[in-house]
Image (cartoon, rainbow over all chains, first blue to last red; front, side, top):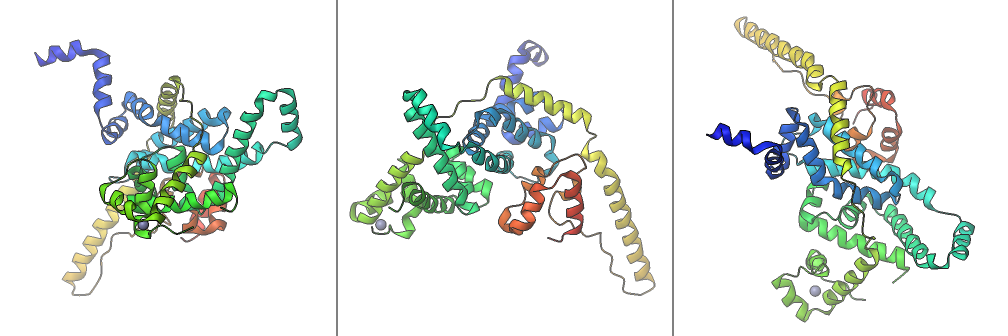
Length: 198
Length: 170
Ligand SMILES: [Zn+2]
């Protein structure tokens, strides 16, 4: 009887069953060789990783590529995920490192020369707002890079990845309250940098 | 500009994100500084808020899965690579136990110890040639190592990294 219902259930039910597992369960299944478990883990976390990567680097043309690399690192090196450490916090640490080192080079590359921007403005006046916005994003990214590392990580995980503070605390290894206090201080510093002395 | 009360600094963040809790709500009724701080934080977050992010295409998860499976096929299991080391460690422990037992029987103080882990930091011993340094870097932060060493590790290629890790103490 139970055998029959499993036979009828099919691949869709299998996928639903995988979706219902927590990360630790999926990690175990992937370790045993179930490729669908890996795919489910990616689908569960890809938006967060992608947001962090895209917004840190400011470069949509490399965001897919870096996101893939982050997941491949995580999925093919699971021996390094130790004990009860959460898959997500481990993944986000890899993502922070990947998008930071790439981001540095890119933000230099993104600083378009003034003449190029002026030309773009004159050619398409409607672009003004877009250019100002992108200038502001660059300014924020530049200010972000000047923050102390710990503040930088917390701000990027919150503003860019949009992670809840509980997960941020797990990723950087602190308490939720302390992550919020650090975040508050960092935002004050960013304001001074971005808005000028205020 | 008055400074907000330090003990409510985390609650200010919640309030700016519209998750105000009852004790802080009643504090706000009598504290101008915290009220101003929440307002300011709200403004700042509005300014700093990044543009909405597109979502990755539906192909991404499949593509990563296939690459991960291919990578797994290509590379021998790390467990297999580690197995000889584990076997060697087990032999050492058995030898040590025998030594300690023999020592006891001849009444001479020999301390048996399992081989200690002298790994500079977790993970490095299983880094194989052909991997880049980013994975190892997920377990170290710049402030733990100082910019010099971190920069060296971050910029090193695979073989360099293994060499550096062999030589630099933590
Ligand atoms: Zn107050």
